[in-house]
Image (tube, rainbow, N blue to C red; front, side, top):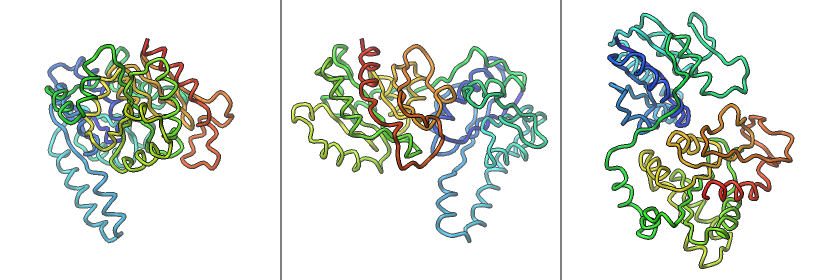
Length: 351
Protein backbone atom coordinates (compact mmCIF):
# COMPACT_ATOMS: atom_id res chain seq x y z
CA UNK A 1 0.00 0.00 0.00
CA UNK A 2 1.25 3.51 -0.84
CA UNK A 3 0.00 6.62 0.97
CA UNK A 4 0.57 10.34 0.32
CA UNK A 5 0.23 12.90 3.14
CA UNK A 6 0.40 16.60 2.21
CA UNK A 7 1.29 19.37 4.67
CA UNK A 8 3.58 21.98 3.17
CA UNK A 9 3.61 24.83 5.69
CA UNK A 10 3.81 26.46 8.19
CA UNK A 11 6.29 25.02 10.67
CA UNK A 12 3.81 24.72 13.54
CA UNK A 13 1.21 23.12 11.25
CA UNK A 14 3.76 20.65 9.91
CA UNK A 15 4.59 19.67 13.49
CA UNK A 16 0.88 19.18 14.18
CA UNK A 17 0.63 16.88 11.16
CA UNK A 18 3.25 14.51 12.59
CA UNK A 19 0.38 12.88 14.49
CA UNK A 20 -1.06 11.84 11.12
CA UNK A 21 2.20 10.09 10.28
CA UNK A 22 2.14 8.25 13.62
CA UNK A 23 -1.50 7.18 13.21
CA UNK A 24 -1.09 6.15 9.57
CA UNK A 25 1.97 4.04 10.33
CA UNK A 26 0.17 2.35 13.25
CA UNK A 27 -2.82 1.47 11.07
CA UNK A 28 -0.79 0.49 8.01
CA UNK A 29 2.54 -0.83 9.38
CA UNK A 30 3.71 -2.14 5.99
CA UNK A 31 2.60 0.86 3.92
CA UNK A 32 4.97 3.12 2.02
CA UNK A 33 4.30 6.63 3.36
CA UNK A 34 5.24 9.72 1.32
CA UNK A 35 5.05 13.19 2.86
CA UNK A 36 4.93 16.44 0.87
CA UNK A 37 6.45 19.39 2.74
CA UNK A 38 7.84 22.81 1.96
CA UNK A 39 11.62 23.19 1.91
CA UNK A 40 11.45 25.67 4.82
CA UNK A 41 9.90 23.00 7.07
CA UNK A 42 11.78 19.95 5.82
CA UNK A 43 14.02 19.60 8.88
CA UNK A 44 10.97 19.27 11.14
CA UNK A 45 10.11 15.88 9.61
CA UNK A 46 13.32 14.77 7.91
CA UNK A 47 14.28 12.29 10.65
CA UNK A 48 10.84 10.79 11.18
CA UNK A 49 11.41 7.03 10.78
CA UNK A 50 7.81 6.47 9.67
CA UNK A 51 8.20 8.55 6.50
CA UNK A 52 9.60 6.58 3.58
CA UNK A 53 9.92 9.49 1.16
CA UNK A 54 9.85 13.29 1.43
CA UNK A 55 8.56 15.27 -1.54
CA UNK A 56 9.93 18.79 -1.11
CA UNK A 57 8.14 21.86 -2.46
CA UNK A 58 9.78 25.33 -2.45
CA UNK A 59 7.16 27.99 -1.69
CA UNK A 60 9.77 30.59 -0.73
CA UNK A 61 11.52 30.39 -4.10
CA UNK A 62 8.19 30.72 -5.88
CA UNK A 63 7.24 33.76 -3.77
CA UNK A 64 10.60 35.40 -4.45
CA UNK A 65 10.22 34.90 -8.19
CA UNK A 66 6.72 36.39 -8.22
CA UNK A 67 7.83 39.42 -6.17
CA UNK A 68 10.63 40.17 -8.60
CA UNK A 69 8.43 40.16 -11.67
CA UNK A 70 5.05 38.88 -12.76
CA UNK A 71 6.81 37.70 -15.92
CA UNK A 72 8.30 34.94 -13.76
CA UNK A 73 4.89 33.28 -13.80
CA UNK A 74 6.15 30.94 -16.51
CA UNK A 75 9.13 29.91 -14.39
CA UNK A 76 6.78 29.37 -11.44
CA UNK A 77 4.52 27.17 -13.56
CA UNK A 78 7.53 25.10 -14.59
CA UNK A 79 8.43 24.60 -10.92
CA UNK A 80 4.85 23.63 -10.04
CA UNK A 81 4.75 21.14 -12.89
CA UNK A 82 8.09 19.66 -11.88
CA UNK A 83 6.74 18.99 -8.37
CA UNK A 84 3.51 17.65 -9.83
CA UNK A 85 5.39 15.23 -12.07
CA UNK A 86 7.19 13.86 -9.01
CA UNK A 87 3.83 13.29 -7.31
CA UNK A 88 2.10 11.85 -10.40
CA UNK A 89 4.80 9.30 -11.12
CA UNK A 90 3.54 7.42 -8.06
CA UNK A 91 0.27 5.47 -7.88
CA UNK A 92 -1.21 5.96 -4.42
CA UNK A 93 -3.89 3.94 -2.73
CA UNK A 94 -4.69 6.87 -0.44
CA UNK A 95 -3.88 10.60 -0.49
CA UNK A 96 -4.75 13.06 2.29
CA UNK A 97 -4.28 16.83 2.15
CA UNK A 98 -3.89 17.91 5.78
CA UNK A 99 -3.67 21.59 4.86
CA UNK A 100 -6.59 22.33 2.56
CA UNK A 101 -5.36 25.48 0.82
CA UNK A 102 -5.11 26.12 -2.92
CA UNK A 103 -1.40 25.39 -3.10
CA UNK A 104 -1.78 21.97 -1.45
CA UNK A 105 -5.11 20.98 -3.00
CA UNK A 106 -3.56 21.42 -6.46
CA UNK A 107 -1.42 18.37 -5.79
CA UNK A 108 -4.28 16.40 -4.24
CA UNK A 109 -6.55 17.00 -7.24
CA UNK A 110 -3.93 15.91 -9.76
CA UNK A 111 -2.16 13.10 -7.93
CA UNK A 112 -2.96 9.55 -8.98
CA UNK A 113 -4.71 8.12 -5.92
CA UNK A 114 -7.61 5.68 -5.56
CA UNK A 115 -9.03 7.65 -2.60
CA UNK A 116 -8.56 11.34 -1.77
CA UNK A 117 -9.43 13.26 1.40
CA UNK A 118 -8.89 16.86 2.50
CA UNK A 119 -9.02 18.97 5.65
CA UNK A 120 -11.91 21.35 5.07
CA UNK A 121 -14.69 21.29 2.50
CA UNK A 122 -13.57 21.41 -1.14
CA UNK A 123 -15.36 20.65 -4.43
CA UNK A 124 -15.33 16.99 -5.57
CA UNK A 125 -13.34 15.88 -2.51
CA UNK A 126 -14.28 14.13 0.72
CA UNK A 127 -13.41 16.59 3.49
CA UNK A 128 -13.74 17.24 7.21
CA UNK A 129 -14.15 20.60 8.91
CA UNK A 130 -14.56 21.31 12.63
CA UNK A 131 -18.16 22.15 13.50
CA UNK A 132 -16.84 24.82 15.88
CA UNK A 133 -14.11 27.10 14.51
CA UNK A 134 -12.59 27.28 18.01
CA UNK A 135 -12.03 23.53 18.25
CA UNK A 136 -8.36 22.63 18.26
CA UNK A 137 -6.54 22.24 14.96
CA UNK A 138 -5.40 18.82 16.15
CA UNK A 139 -9.06 17.74 16.43
CA UNK A 140 -9.55 18.78 12.80
CA UNK A 141 -6.60 16.67 11.72
CA UNK A 142 -7.96 13.69 13.62
CA UNK A 143 -11.38 14.21 12.05
CA UNK A 144 -9.83 14.23 8.59
CA UNK A 145 -7.96 11.03 9.34
CA UNK A 146 -11.13 9.39 10.66
CA UNK A 147 -12.93 10.25 7.44
CA UNK A 148 -10.11 8.45 5.60
CA UNK A 149 -10.54 5.41 7.84
CA UNK A 150 -7.51 6.09 10.07
CA UNK A 151 -7.92 6.14 13.86
CA UNK A 152 -5.84 9.07 15.14
CA UNK A 153 -7.55 9.61 18.50
CA UNK A 154 -4.75 8.44 20.76
CA UNK A 155 -1.97 10.17 18.82
CA UNK A 156 -0.39 13.59 19.29
CA UNK A 157 2.37 15.45 17.43
CA UNK A 158 5.80 13.93 17.86
CA UNK A 159 9.23 15.18 16.83
CA UNK A 160 12.18 12.96 15.98
CA UNK A 161 15.64 14.44 16.40
CA UNK A 162 18.79 13.62 14.49
CA UNK A 163 21.11 11.22 16.27
CA UNK A 164 24.13 13.16 17.46
CA UNK A 165 22.26 16.46 17.25
CA UNK A 166 22.99 17.37 20.87
CA UNK A 167 26.74 17.26 20.28
CA UNK A 168 26.41 19.33 17.10
CA UNK A 169 24.37 21.95 18.96
CA UNK A 170 26.73 22.19 21.93
CA UNK A 171 29.69 22.84 19.64
CA UNK A 172 27.89 26.00 18.50
CA UNK A 173 27.12 27.29 21.98
CA UNK A 174 29.29 29.39 24.32
CA UNK A 175 30.93 27.28 27.03
CA UNK A 176 28.89 28.94 29.77
CA UNK A 177 25.63 27.89 28.11
CA UNK A 178 26.82 24.34 27.49
CA UNK A 179 27.69 23.97 31.17
CA UNK A 180 24.33 25.42 32.18
CA UNK A 181 22.50 22.89 29.99
CA UNK A 182 24.45 20.08 31.64
CA UNK A 183 23.95 21.39 35.21
CA UNK A 184 20.70 20.06 36.71
CA UNK A 185 20.77 22.81 39.35
CA UNK A 186 20.93 25.65 36.82
CA UNK A 187 17.91 26.75 34.79
CA UNK A 188 18.04 27.49 31.06
CA UNK A 189 15.03 29.39 29.72
CA UNK A 190 14.36 30.01 26.03
CA UNK A 191 12.46 33.11 24.93
CA UNK A 192 10.88 33.35 21.47
CA UNK A 193 9.34 36.80 20.90
CA UNK A 194 8.75 36.81 17.14
CA UNK A 195 6.19 34.98 14.99
CA UNK A 196 4.78 35.20 11.48
CA UNK A 197 2.24 37.87 12.61
CA UNK A 198 3.36 41.14 14.18
CA UNK A 199 0.24 41.15 16.39
CA UNK A 200 1.31 37.87 18.01
CA UNK A 201 4.77 39.20 18.92
CA UNK A 202 5.21 39.88 22.63
CA UNK A 203 7.75 42.75 22.85
CA UNK A 204 11.37 41.92 23.65
CA UNK A 205 11.40 44.48 26.46
CA UNK A 206 8.50 42.64 28.11
CA UNK A 207 10.39 39.37 27.85
CA UNK A 208 13.30 41.08 29.58
CA UNK A 209 11.04 42.33 32.38
CA UNK A 210 9.71 38.79 32.78
CA UNK A 211 13.28 37.48 32.92
CA UNK A 212 14.12 39.94 35.69
CA UNK A 213 11.14 38.75 37.72
CA UNK A 214 11.97 35.06 37.20
CA UNK A 215 15.61 35.68 38.14
CA UNK A 216 14.56 36.84 41.60
CA UNK A 217 13.76 33.18 42.38
CA UNK A 218 16.34 31.66 40.05
CA UNK A 219 19.35 34.02 40.13
CA UNK A 220 21.62 31.70 38.15
CA UNK A 221 19.14 31.16 35.32
CA UNK A 222 20.33 31.70 31.76
CA UNK A 223 17.88 33.35 29.34
CA UNK A 224 18.26 32.64 25.61
CA UNK A 225 16.49 34.58 22.86
CA UNK A 226 15.81 32.53 19.71
CA UNK A 227 14.48 33.63 16.35
CA UNK A 228 15.23 34.01 12.66
CA UNK A 229 18.43 35.69 11.38
CA UNK A 230 16.62 38.92 10.46
CA UNK A 231 15.67 39.45 14.12
CA UNK A 232 19.16 39.15 15.60
CA UNK A 233 20.14 42.83 15.31
CA UNK A 234 16.72 43.97 16.50
CA UNK A 235 16.98 41.81 19.64
CA UNK A 236 20.54 43.02 20.27
CA UNK A 237 19.44 46.65 20.04
CA UNK A 238 16.47 46.18 22.33
CA UNK A 239 18.64 44.45 24.93
CA UNK A 240 21.03 47.44 24.80
CA UNK A 241 18.17 49.95 25.05
CA UNK A 242 16.74 48.16 28.07
CA UNK A 243 19.90 48.98 30.08
CA UNK A 244 20.13 45.79 32.08
CA UNK A 245 22.11 45.53 35.27
CA UNK A 246 25.63 44.53 34.11
CA UNK A 247 25.73 41.37 36.22
CA UNK A 248 22.31 40.21 35.05
CA UNK A 249 23.16 41.07 31.43
CA UNK A 250 25.78 38.29 31.41
CA UNK A 251 22.91 35.80 31.75
CA UNK A 252 21.08 37.06 28.64
CA UNK A 253 21.95 35.47 25.29
CA UNK A 254 20.83 36.18 21.74
CA UNK A 255 20.97 33.09 19.52
CA UNK A 256 18.55 34.37 16.87
CA UNK A 257 19.70 33.02 13.52
CA UNK A 258 22.32 30.76 15.09
CA UNK A 259 20.41 27.48 14.83
CA UNK A 260 18.57 25.57 12.12
CA UNK A 261 15.22 23.90 12.88
CA UNK A 262 16.78 20.65 14.10
CA UNK A 263 19.21 22.50 16.39
CA UNK A 264 16.40 24.68 17.70
CA UNK A 265 14.37 21.57 18.49
CA UNK A 266 17.36 20.08 20.30
CA UNK A 267 17.82 23.30 22.29
CA UNK A 268 14.16 23.29 23.31
CA UNK A 269 14.51 19.65 24.41
CA UNK A 270 17.50 20.47 26.59
CA UNK A 271 16.13 23.69 28.09
CA UNK A 272 14.22 23.74 31.37
CA UNK A 273 11.50 26.04 30.04
CA UNK A 274 10.40 27.78 26.85
CA UNK A 275 8.46 31.06 26.87
CA UNK A 276 7.07 31.81 23.41
CA UNK A 277 4.74 34.10 21.55
CA UNK A 278 2.12 31.86 19.92
CA UNK A 279 3.77 30.13 16.99
CA UNK A 280 5.99 27.24 15.94
CA UNK A 281 8.33 27.32 18.94
CA UNK A 282 5.47 26.64 21.35
CA UNK A 283 4.27 23.74 19.19
CA UNK A 284 7.79 22.27 19.13
CA UNK A 285 7.99 22.40 22.93
CA UNK A 286 4.60 20.69 23.26
CA UNK A 287 5.53 18.00 20.74
CA UNK A 288 8.72 17.33 22.70
CA UNK A 289 6.68 17.30 25.95
CA UNK A 290 8.82 20.06 27.43
CA UNK A 291 7.62 22.83 29.81
CA UNK A 292 6.28 25.81 27.87
CA UNK A 293 4.43 29.10 28.43
CA UNK A 294 2.67 30.35 25.30
CA UNK A 295 1.58 33.99 25.02
CA UNK A 296 -1.74 34.61 23.22
CA UNK A 297 -3.32 37.77 21.86
CA UNK A 298 -5.11 37.74 18.48
CA UNK A 299 -5.39 33.95 18.23
CA UNK A 300 -7.53 31.47 20.14
CA UNK A 301 -5.84 29.04 22.61
CA UNK A 302 -8.61 26.48 22.19
CA UNK A 303 -7.75 26.41 18.47
CA UNK A 304 -3.94 26.49 18.44
CA UNK A 305 -2.91 26.28 22.09
CA UNK A 306 -0.27 24.00 23.61
CA UNK A 307 -1.22 20.58 24.90
CA UNK A 308 0.03 18.38 27.73
CA UNK A 309 0.53 18.84 31.46
CA UNK A 310 3.71 20.89 31.08
CA UNK A 311 2.12 23.86 29.32
CA UNK A 312 0.58 27.15 30.39
CA UNK A 313 -1.44 29.69 28.40
CA UNK A 314 -0.64 33.37 29.02
CA UNK A 315 -3.42 35.76 28.04
CA UNK A 316 -4.62 39.25 28.91
CA UNK A 317 -7.29 39.42 31.60
CA UNK A 318 -8.32 42.92 30.55
CA UNK A 319 -8.42 43.12 26.74
CA UNK A 320 -11.90 42.74 25.22
CA UNK A 321 -10.66 42.11 21.69
CA UNK A 322 -8.89 38.77 22.21
CA UNK A 323 -8.88 36.24 19.35
CA UNK A 324 -9.60 39.00 16.81
CA UNK A 325 -7.32 37.26 14.27
CA UNK A 326 -6.11 40.64 13.01
CA UNK A 327 -2.56 40.70 11.62
CA UNK A 328 -2.17 44.45 12.14
CA UNK A 329 -3.27 46.56 15.09
CA UNK A 330 -2.61 50.13 16.25
CA UNK A 331 -3.55 49.54 19.89
CA UNK A 332 -2.14 46.11 20.73
CA UNK A 333 -3.62 46.18 24.25
CA UNK A 334 -3.76 42.38 24.40
CA UNK A 335 0.04 42.38 24.84
CA UNK A 336 0.11 44.71 27.87
CA UNK A 337 1.05 43.76 31.42
CA UNK A 338 1.51 40.02 31.09
CA UNK A 339 4.79 39.84 32.98
CA UNK A 340 3.21 38.81 36.29
CA UNK A 341 1.38 35.93 34.61
CA UNK A 342 4.53 34.84 32.79
CA UNK A 343 6.76 34.89 35.86
CA UNK A 344 4.17 33.07 37.99
CA UNK A 345 3.67 30.33 35.37
CA UNK A 346 7.42 30.04 34.80
CA UNK A 347 8.16 29.61 38.49
CA UNK A 348 5.40 27.00 38.74
CA UNK A 349 6.82 24.97 35.85
CA UNK A 350 10.44 25.32 36.95
CA UNK A 351 9.68 24.07 40.46
